[in-house]
Image 1 (cartoon, rainbow, N blue to C red):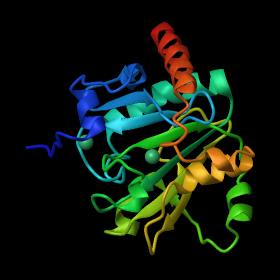
Image 2 (image 1 turned 45 degrees about the vertical axis):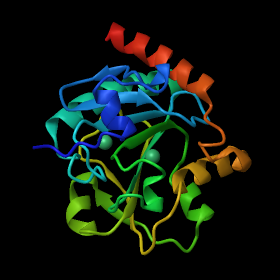
Image 3 (image 1 turned 90 degrees about the horizontal axis):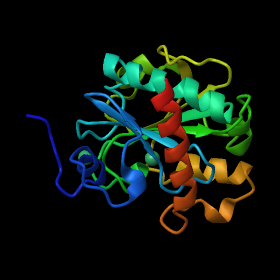
Length: 214
Ligand SMILES: [Zn+2]
Ligand SMILES: [Zn+2]
């Protein structure tokens, strides 16, 4: 039996219970869905969410249903918005700071250009290991982690080689703070205070339309 949590916002979305209009997935298959993100500092900010309630994506990356949905979304996003960064803050404990308020796994896809040097200059002492997405589960074991992958020209998610950091302590909204910093909008990185619902509405509208055409 799959673990399912009644008060989980993402489990609710799979049950078609929506807090906001933007919660309605703009694309999905039997195991994953794509939803416009709340707190989107830029239009296009998307979450890929597994149906099964789990704390991180580490076991999802090898699933065909994940690859199949993400490979439908990425080319459309790149065409509409240009380069993307894909990232995950993988938590391992209900209520962990790392989960940023939701205990349900998700991968962020965000229009953002990084040649691969921004994160190292943002946190110079932080160690990142090159890692295929398929290797994360084995490398992190029960630790929490951060993973990102820059999608510049590649329009396919095929076990990408991204950067992995194993956390010693939980960290809150790490990538949001990083992106806000480079957008010059550090004061607006907390999605609870700045939900940016208008951006999410535009994302949903644009990507739902583009997906319908594909
Ligand atoms: Zn859930
Ligand atoms: Zn998140």
